Length: 163
Image (cartoon, rainbow, N blue to C red):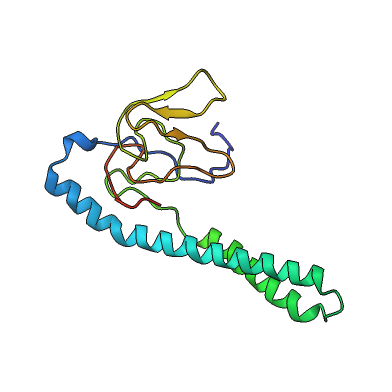
Protein backbone atom coordinates (compact mmCIF):
# COMPACT_ATOMS: atom_id res chain seq x y z
CA UNK A 1 0.00 0.00 0.00
CA UNK A 2 1.38 3.38 -1.01
CA UNK A 3 1.74 6.21 1.44
CA UNK A 4 -1.08 8.74 1.43
CA UNK A 5 1.26 11.55 2.50
CA UNK A 6 0.55 14.74 0.55
CA UNK A 7 3.73 16.25 -0.88
CA UNK A 8 3.77 20.03 -1.02
CA UNK A 9 7.22 20.09 -2.58
CA UNK A 10 8.67 17.96 -5.31
CA UNK A 11 10.77 15.09 -3.98
CA UNK A 12 14.51 15.72 -3.82
CA UNK A 13 16.61 14.44 -6.71
CA UNK A 14 19.98 12.92 -5.98
CA UNK A 15 22.48 15.03 -7.96
CA UNK A 16 24.22 13.02 -10.67
CA UNK A 17 27.29 15.28 -10.47
CA UNK A 18 28.68 17.75 -7.95
CA UNK A 19 30.40 21.11 -8.43
CA UNK A 20 33.92 19.72 -8.67
CA UNK A 21 32.88 17.33 -11.46
CA UNK A 22 31.84 20.12 -13.86
CA UNK A 23 34.16 22.01 -16.19
CA UNK A 24 34.58 25.79 -15.89
CA UNK A 25 32.54 26.29 -19.09
CA UNK A 26 29.64 24.24 -17.70
CA UNK A 27 29.69 26.17 -14.41
CA UNK A 28 29.62 29.49 -16.30
CA UNK A 29 26.76 28.23 -18.45
CA UNK A 30 24.77 27.33 -15.30
CA UNK A 31 25.36 30.87 -13.97
CA UNK A 32 24.13 32.36 -17.25
CA UNK A 33 21.07 30.09 -17.27
CA UNK A 34 20.23 31.00 -13.69
CA UNK A 35 20.74 34.80 -14.01
CA UNK A 36 17.19 35.58 -15.31
CA UNK A 37 15.64 33.41 -12.58
CA UNK A 38 17.61 35.20 -9.85
CA UNK A 39 16.67 38.62 -11.26
CA UNK A 40 13.00 37.64 -11.42
CA UNK A 41 13.09 36.26 -7.87
CA UNK A 42 14.69 39.48 -6.53
CA UNK A 43 12.12 41.61 -8.37
CA UNK A 44 9.26 39.49 -7.00
CA UNK A 45 10.64 39.81 -3.47
CA UNK A 46 10.93 43.60 -3.74
CA UNK A 47 7.34 43.86 -5.02
CA UNK A 48 6.10 41.76 -2.11
CA UNK A 49 7.95 43.96 0.41
CA UNK A 50 6.42 47.12 -1.10
CA UNK A 51 2.94 45.58 -1.03
CA UNK A 52 3.35 44.49 2.59
CA UNK A 53 4.45 48.02 3.53
CA UNK A 54 1.43 49.46 1.71
CA UNK A 55 -0.86 47.07 3.55
CA UNK A 56 0.67 48.02 6.90
CA UNK A 57 0.33 51.73 6.09
CA UNK A 58 -3.32 51.17 5.16
CA UNK A 59 -3.99 49.47 8.49
CA UNK A 60 -2.27 52.31 10.38
CA UNK A 61 -4.35 54.90 8.51
CA UNK A 62 -7.50 52.90 9.24
CA UNK A 63 -6.70 52.78 12.97
CA UNK A 64 -5.59 56.42 13.29
CA UNK A 65 -8.30 58.00 11.16
CA UNK A 66 -11.42 56.21 12.34
CA UNK A 67 -13.69 59.05 11.22
CA UNK A 68 -12.89 58.38 7.54
CA UNK A 69 -15.01 56.00 5.48
CA UNK A 70 -13.73 52.46 5.90
CA UNK A 71 -14.72 51.29 2.42
CA UNK A 72 -12.13 53.38 0.57
CA UNK A 73 -9.29 51.71 2.42
CA UNK A 74 -10.64 48.18 2.95
CA UNK A 75 -11.05 47.47 -0.78
CA UNK A 76 -7.42 48.30 -1.71
CA UNK A 77 -6.25 46.45 1.41
CA UNK A 78 -8.10 43.32 0.28
CA UNK A 79 -6.59 43.64 -3.21
CA UNK A 80 -3.06 44.04 -1.78
CA UNK A 81 -3.41 40.96 0.43
CA UNK A 82 -4.84 38.96 -2.48
CA UNK A 83 -1.90 39.94 -4.71
CA UNK A 84 0.63 39.07 -1.96
CA UNK A 85 -0.88 35.66 -1.28
CA UNK A 86 -1.53 34.93 -4.97
CA UNK A 87 2.01 35.91 -5.90
CA UNK A 88 3.43 33.61 -3.25
CA UNK A 89 1.41 30.70 -4.55
CA UNK A 90 1.87 31.31 -8.28
CA UNK A 91 5.56 32.23 -8.35
CA UNK A 92 7.62 29.03 -8.54
CA UNK A 93 10.55 28.31 -6.26
CA UNK A 94 13.92 28.75 -7.93
CA UNK A 95 15.59 25.49 -8.91
CA UNK A 96 19.19 24.62 -9.65
CA UNK A 97 19.87 24.19 -13.37
CA UNK A 98 22.46 21.51 -12.56
CA UNK A 99 20.47 19.09 -10.40
CA UNK A 100 16.89 20.49 -10.70
CA UNK A 101 16.40 20.63 -6.92
CA UNK A 102 14.75 23.49 -5.08
CA UNK A 103 17.11 26.15 -3.76
CA UNK A 104 14.71 27.03 -0.94
CA UNK A 105 15.29 23.76 0.90
CA UNK A 106 17.10 23.56 4.22
CA UNK A 107 20.87 23.31 3.61
CA UNK A 108 22.02 19.69 3.73
CA UNK A 109 25.39 19.09 2.08
CA UNK A 110 26.62 22.41 0.69
CA UNK A 111 26.60 25.90 2.17
CA UNK A 112 24.21 28.21 0.26
CA UNK A 113 26.48 31.20 0.95
CA UNK A 114 29.88 29.90 -0.21
CA UNK A 115 29.16 26.49 -1.77
CA UNK A 116 31.61 24.55 0.43
CA UNK A 117 30.86 21.13 1.85
CA UNK A 118 31.77 21.95 5.47
CA UNK A 119 28.36 22.20 7.15
CA UNK A 120 28.12 21.11 10.77
CA UNK A 121 25.59 21.45 13.54
CA UNK A 122 26.98 23.37 16.48
CA UNK A 123 25.81 20.79 19.01
CA UNK A 124 23.01 18.31 18.38
CA UNK A 125 19.45 18.61 17.11
CA UNK A 126 17.51 21.91 17.47
CA UNK A 127 20.67 23.97 16.92
CA UNK A 128 21.40 25.82 13.70
CA UNK A 129 23.80 24.59 11.06
CA UNK A 130 27.12 26.40 10.71
CA UNK A 131 29.49 26.52 7.76
CA UNK A 132 33.04 25.96 8.89
CA UNK A 133 34.41 27.55 5.71
CA UNK A 134 32.68 30.97 5.72
CA UNK A 135 31.52 30.94 9.37
CA UNK A 136 27.89 31.69 8.47
CA UNK A 137 25.22 30.33 10.80
CA UNK A 138 22.32 29.02 8.72
CA UNK A 139 19.05 29.45 10.56
CA UNK A 140 15.69 28.45 9.21
CA UNK A 141 12.29 28.98 10.71
CA UNK A 142 10.30 32.15 10.09
CA UNK A 143 12.97 33.72 7.93
CA UNK A 144 16.37 32.74 6.73
CA UNK A 145 19.28 34.97 7.58
CA UNK A 146 21.55 33.99 4.74
CA UNK A 147 21.67 34.56 1.00
CA UNK A 148 21.47 31.75 -1.49
CA UNK A 149 24.42 31.92 -3.86
CA UNK A 150 25.03 28.19 -4.41
CA UNK A 151 22.92 25.05 -4.64
CA UNK A 152 22.69 23.18 -1.33
CA UNK A 153 22.42 19.82 -3.13
CA UNK A 154 25.23 19.87 -5.71
CA UNK A 155 27.25 22.94 -4.63
CA UNK A 156 27.18 24.79 -7.97
CA UNK A 157 27.76 28.54 -7.49
CA UNK A 158 24.80 30.18 -9.24
CA UNK A 159 24.62 33.86 -8.28
CA UNK A 160 27.16 36.40 -7.01
CA UNK A 161 24.65 38.75 -5.36
CA UNK A 162 22.54 36.09 -3.72
CA UNK A 163 18.84 36.28 -2.96
